[in-house]
Image (cartoon, rainbow, N blue to C red; front, side, top):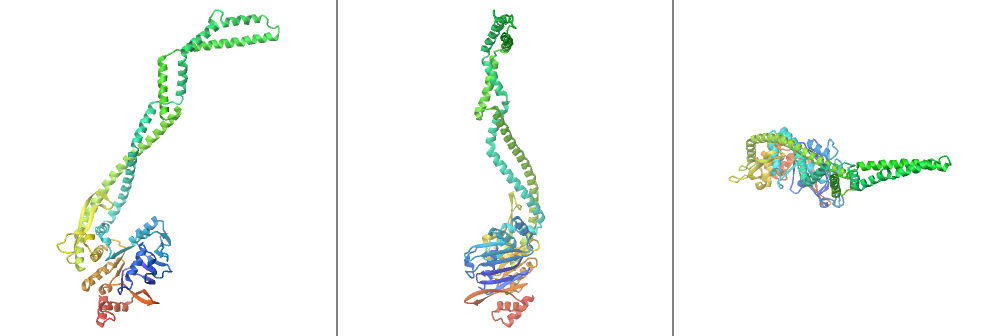
Length: 551
């Protein structure tokens, strides 16, 4: 509830501080005294825009500060979410400088206007006969019906699950959208990966094949050369080995003649060993070389595959091809992992959908049960509020999709006159009719739901006498559980006040200033009497005022 509001340098208000009672606060005063200016100042706290034209003194800044106590829990949740301090009291301050710049604060922390809008929607419900009121919105209409149907716990369960459902749907849509974008790419990657995998790549294979290919391509020449070498070294007449040995033995006859001859003998021995090794190697090569055209073709085909893959992927080695293959494999696994996650999310979505639908059906059944009693109660109250031909009807349609509140599309339809068609409130109800309808609805559900501070701006316009008294009674009953602030010109409504605030003007140094005063019992009698008969009030009006207050 609003505990107090401090207003300085705003419109024709120099400085005013107003404390409100937690139940029914009535504001009265002559036309033009500044009653609506107080609401205008409150509107700035609620996040409305303003400029320097609102300043009383153009050289000074305007300050409007509202203090709230015992406010709804949702406010604390919102403050924590926005990382604002949560205090026992909530203080919202608005400052407008002489140059028109505006600043806002929540518990002394700077805030943007949309934050003020969000907070005030939980704190204040402004019902003005000149505005499209919240009752015209299906969201509030449904909230009122749910309150009567005692749907609080079931709706909370539904909405908790619905948030999870929406999160899954969002995540699933993102995965599927990305899959569509990646599908062509991943198909091509699968093809390339399959091509590399089927190639059976091995790190050393290419080097070994290229070496074998070179050998095979020269095999015929090498075989001839190896055989020729073997023949000349050992197998021919007067072979190199034979001629060499003859020379060796001849030199041996002269050993120990001098050291130089001994050295020659040693060299002959070394050369003999080398010649033997050359012979053995050439024999080995000759025995191994077996020219095989089919093997040569096989190697060439295999190398063509490797070279083709390297050209395709713009690399030079098999190692790089293997690295690309591994990369393709990782991408495919990631994509397939998303597919698995998608299927898992789909299953969760289906299970949650069944649960939500069952809860939505239960919510709908409960709502339908209260339609007749709601229509009956509201229509009776409208008759009391001088709208005997007006009535409401609740229209319910079932949505094909899950909504945040179930599967019901609910509208309260209204007709003001006999023979008229039931239509949405915003299409047919005037400002005054909407305000009275709001009062009738809220007084019907007041005990069933938590409502913010309600402000009614002249909802009794055009109503007087007994009807105004009944409207006052309705406001009084509503204020037993909720804070109300009502601007009125009706003495019957004013008489129901728990706190009566009187707004008046005075002239100071060629300027008009608005003041607000909380009236005591005697002052209330006098003020209501003035509203009944004029100023000064008659004796009869004073007595009548006392009776109104006592009643």
